[in-house]
Figure: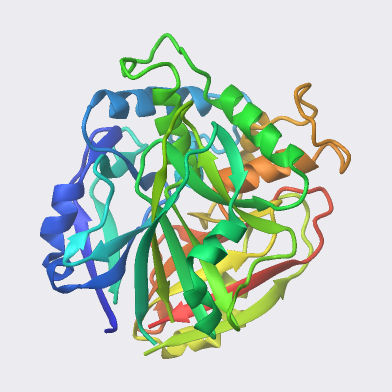
Length: 139
Length: 139
Length: 139
């Protein structure tokens, strides 16, 4: 019982939605020692998000990227925050919509996800760089 | 002090937004023994969501469904993930936007919600089937 | 170890996105005594949200407000929940999209946010009044 906390970095990825479940499990072997708990993953950035979505067909990730780009288009005439490039302000808006952190149940030493669920890094910038994650596991 | 964790199933519901506060309280009598804590509810699916919204006028739930359908329309020409039906890819996108889990404070043996707040099951599929919830109560 | 829970009120603010990190830290001096934990902030309302986004340039907050107003416009002809004014139903939809609560890691007595991250109160009503927050800090 108690809280375990650590920070790690996800390597730079292209703009889009990326399945990172395996990478999270590798970074957090402590999950295997947890019988019942919650894992909070928090991304320390305002232009990338964490989400949970389908772990199977990669076309879901393609369509998430293209549809979010339609919901929050670049170069909207009303934008005032434009000096960091056309992908910047849409990235902040997508980050607000999708969220900076997710909570995942841990049961019997494993992520207790549904059969079709995986963890996504949602990279909203064209060149976002590596992304820092704070992981907090409480049990 | 510590964590209590259990899994239960919500019966199949029609596509739309459904108020399930009473059902959650019935499924989790352990809430009544918790003086101060947090309840995490996690839905193990990628085409349905949990959310918190108004518990009074049902017209809010009608308008949430119709408006989300406008923000994420079916049959968009750019969709590539189409073989599970026209409601499938929009369901994944809505699930990403609304989220798979919610955290609720527990105080003095009760959900510490605002006067007008209730828990919603957001069913994004036409025939989504029963939905599994992992509940984790930590105090 | 254990949970600390308290409730406080944010003063009424104009419709829009507001940086409240300093106010949260002032309301919760207990953060300083926490070596490793998670802070859950929960807003007890269905027409305002909490979010994490850029803490520097105020133009990000201006563009978030104007863009959310475009994603969820007022006076949509299909709205049925209209008797509380044109800003009411859009406020419920924005609250569902952005969410009622956020989780923040606490490390070494401080909010462990990224360099550019701050806490936002997202006020979706024209005259929302003061807003109640339930804070739960577990460590």
